[in-house]
Length: 303
Length: 66
Ligand code: SF4
Ligand SMILES: [Zn+2]
Ligand SMILES: [Zn+2]
Image (cartoon, rainbow over all chains, first blue to last red; front, side):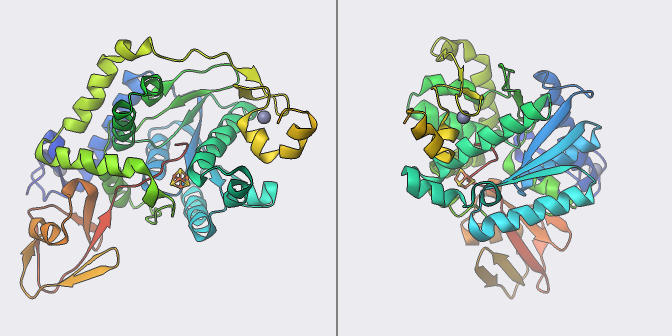
């Protein structure tokens, strides 16, 4: 199979575009897709400070690499949840990446800050690891972005992440959640805007890009992801994609075009400042403080 | 040839196309990349008898901030 652009041996075929490409033209193609997403949704400008949340995996490292290559002002944040060997390994990949590309990396470790990893808090709150994990990550990236005056938080969510969440929410008709699957969430008070520049790329594309660009990334999965229901959604969508290439992309594009149908179901909620930490919250004490500052919350008579 | 995928290893004594190898493992081409040394293989590529190839799963369950 030959590269459509130069006739050299193809490194990959992109079925969705019916396009075989060599290493060089594939990497160029991927970078153009990221530029297009940033441009199409006016995500950020060159002079803005970007905080990229990284996990050591292919998506967040490929995103950091591309943004850095395109000349954006990028800093990295890794949140160490203390999930045994998995978190230790993730941290090593993040540190190596930051060193190799001379990028600044901030690490927040639950064990160092709170004396125990995320599982310790699950026992205490009877919540699942995954539900606490999402809350903790959101809390810290919002906090760091605000306190360190970043303009935007960028995450490595790709097309597969977006369409699997979309399908899951549509199957459950949780229409008020659908707007969270937007490529850009605007700034709101202390919450900085959030951008997903990889939304035009599939997981296979980001993995191939990371590999062909010489980025070492963690291939081990979080031990809790085996139960993550949206993995099932991903497999289903990939079955369809295999027989009808382009379905995932057109599903997502259709969602963006029909957003007005769901916008009216969007929950308009008033956020208040948490009494303990001052960050935006639905209640007087935010979920993070209810979990991590339980005693203080109790003393304040709020739980 | 030797092909590794997760904890499984399969061996064949005859050259084989990547497409047929993926089928033998029951894998969807959208969910993997196929690595030989520092290059990727397309579905049409042949894996030769002396080659060692690895299949990397690319579907992940969690993303930062999910
Ligand atoms: S699978 Fe792992 S990384 Fe993903 S939400 Fe659950 S605990 Fe967090
Ligand atoms: Zn080429
Ligand atoms: Zn709080």
